[in-house]
Structures are given as structure tokens and as C-alpha cells.
Image (cartoon, rainbow, N blue to C red; front, side):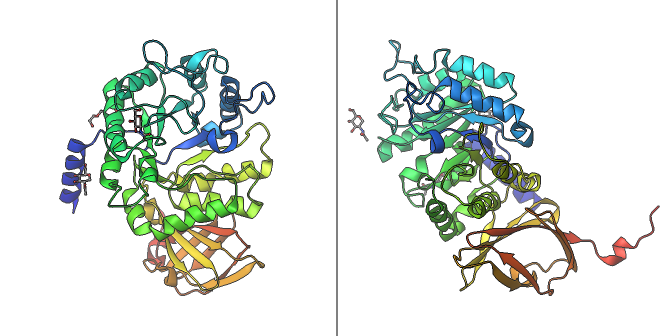
Length: 414
Ligand SMILES: *[C@@H]1O[C@H](CO)[C@@H](O)[C@H](O)[C@H]1NC(C)=O
Ligand SMILES: *[C@@H]1O[C@H](CO)[C@@H](O)[C@H](O)[C@H]1NC(C)=O
Ligand SMILES: *[C@@H]1O[C@H](CO)[C@@H](O)[C@H](O)[C@H]1NC(C)=O
């Protein structure tokens, strides 16, 4: 068994451009969902895509506890560029909205102990019509990003053909590697090829990308969250095994703090993303976010579960005819996380079950901590019947750990 693991590791090393980054799912802030392509800085100066917005959010990440909990990427999305490349063919930031340039922004972000992410598109244009990177531009653009000391690249796929993508995404991985600067790489490639094999080769993606978007963009609504969760669970036999340290499925940004989710739904998104070992990229106004939403996003036990070093993506283990779904994620040291999720729209539902029927049978007894309330429940055996009360479109989330058997526990202390 051990030998197989070592051999596998050697084989992977030979074929991959392992950059050593993102051994746990990345966390941070990404502009797109909340700020889109708002370039109207005259009328909406506080909410437009300019260097001020990224500096403000970086200040908040550093000063309001986010960075210290792991939210350390501050990521630019589309619409940061000037409409054309410069005379040498290099990408340029929009001179009005980013007068100090991206290098200065990276310096600022680094001075706060954060990392800067940037956006490009493997095609003729970005989705919003700014200069794309074609197969011929890939090396120059990677060098440009490295010269600005950027730490992450999200490479979108608008205005590309399948052939452009098949050349361009691995090409950019090589080009980033060749710069010598560790730059995390987020690939939108699979989302443009339907997200599934045979068109999508997840073996290849795990070798060249640190994370990948494989489904639709998230929108500010519960319906959008549900459609993503549905697609992930429907395809979990394909998606679950390909996630792991250094290479993650990305179901897209967290909506928490915006307009479309109720409090219960916000807690549900956070719990489901955590059980899926998903990247945690917020996309909300950190200058005005409510304490209630901060509590969801800064829940320490939640973050510990999301960042578990084994990096195993969870799965939906059952779905009842009463619209209750149970997700389980195995964690290090024999611990686990469980999410009881209600898709009901009537009233809090009393769901009765046992740990045994959720496949927990290895230990005589378990202790549980409720991730949102902090309550501890002791002495659950696999046969104990218990009830969890799950709010409509809400979750109950448990962190579960086996209790060593009594014989061991009663050893005299030395
Ligand atoms: C480039 O790839 C090699 C081979 O996987 C790896 O050892 C090296 O750390 C990579 N360099 C960067 C900057 O990603
Ligand atoms: C990209 O531009 C080239 C050159 O104009 C064109 O031939 C190609 O069809 C374009 N590709 C896409 C996917 O729009
Ligand atoms: C997928 O990519 C891997 C790694 O590059 C390669 O070995 C394999 O042949 C590819 N699979 C298919 C079906 O193309």
C-alpha cells in the first residue's frame, strides 16, 4: 500500500508542473459576483472596479480578522485592463482606474501580508471584451504577471474554441512555471467544455491547475446555489475523487453578505461549500458586511473543517423522500463533518436517524460539536437514535469525533 502511494507520487511528479501551492482550499476575496464590470467610477466611485476598491478590501481583510483566519487572497476579476495592449503587446491596467498600476497594487497587498490574484481569458477577448490571451500571447502575459509579482491567475474561457483551450490552458501552466514565480492557477477550462468527461480530462487538470471552475457562474440567488449543489451531487462520482491538496473543484464564490440569501441560506452555503472542500472566496462589501454574516464567514470550526489537511471532498450520502439530504466529509484524525440539509419550504423539520445509518460504525462512541451553535453532544453510539431540527433551506452541521474506548480511557495517568 505504502509502496503504491510512493510510486504514484513519483509518476505524478514526472508529468505535472507541481507548484506546491494551495495544499488546502484557497480563501480570500474575489471581485466578480458583487462588483461585476462596474466601471462607472464617476457615478459610483465606491463600487467600481478600480485600485481603490482592491485597496479598501485588502485593508478590511488585514484589519478585520479575515487574513488571520486564512482569507489571504485579494483577487481582481474582469475589467481591470485598458482596452488595448501597449505598443510592445503587453497587457496594461486601465490608466484612469488603476493609475498606480498592478505592480504597485501587488506591493500594497503584500505589505499587508496578503496575496494578489489577477484575471485573464484564454481567448480572443475577455468575457467583457477586454484583450484576451491567445496561444501566441501566453508566454508574454505570464511574464507580465510575474513581473508585477502577482500570486494567482484566474484564466477564463470566453471567445475561445475547444482547440484554443486545449493548447492554451496547458500552455499557460508551462508559461507560469517558466517564470519561476509560484503563481496559483485557476482554470475555467472545464466549464467551457461541459464540466464532464470525456470532453474534460480531470487527470490533466489536476496536473496543471490548482483549482478549476466546472459549472455555471454563481448568481446572487438561492436558486443559483441549489443548481450548483445539484450539479455537484449529481456528478459527485466524477468530481469527488479528483479534488485533493493542490487541486480543487471550485463551485464559485460565496454569496454571503449580499442580497439574495436569507440567513439560513447563507449558513447553508457556507456549510455545503465547506463539506465540498471548496475554495472560500467571498465577494461582498467587507466595509459594510453585517456582524451576523461575519460570524458565518469567520466561524473558526467551519474554517478548520474547510482547511482540513487531508483535503478530501465530501459527498452526499443520502437523500430522503422528505427533502432532507445528508453530506459527509472525512477529516484527519478520524474526525468527520456532517451536514444535514433541508430543502423543505414549510417549517423546521425533525429528522430522526442514527450514526450507524450514516455509515459511522468504527467506534463504540462518538462526540459531536454543532458547528454553528457550539453545543456538544456526548455518548452517541452508532445505534443511538437522535433528532436534528433543520430549518427550511437550512442546515445543521456537526463536527464528529470518535471517543477512544473505555478501557483506554480508564488507564491510570502516569
Ligand atoms: C515548475 O515545475 C517543476 C516540476 O514540477 C517544479 O519542481 C517547480 O517547483 C515549478 N516551479 C514553479 C515556479 O511553479
Ligand atoms: C478568434 O480570432 C481569430 C482571428 O480573428 C478567428 O479566426 C477565430 O475564429 C476567433 N475565435 C473565436 C472562438 O472567436
Ligand atoms: C488525460 O490526461 C492525462 C495526463 O495528461 C493523459 O495521460 C491521458 O491520456 C488523458 N486522457 C485522455 C482520455 O485523453
